[in-house]
Image (cartoon, rainbow, N blue to C red; front, side, top):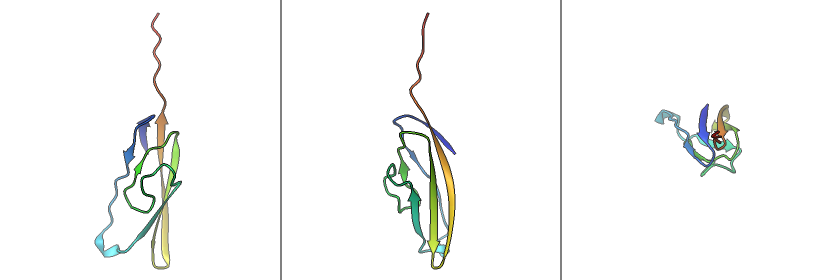
Length: 79
């Protein structure tokens, strides 16, 4: 998985051999992604989120997941 600070974004890396084209991609939840239909969207979650990626080619499909853990602001106390 990935770890980011609140307010940050993370691009999901990924690649597929060209012999597997055309694959149709679908990420869920889609609300915090720049494009839920591409292999490498940029995620900007406001809370820790598990994203699911489904790739479909003809009648075959596979699903995998990735978690993005969001850390809120750090507070320091000086005494």
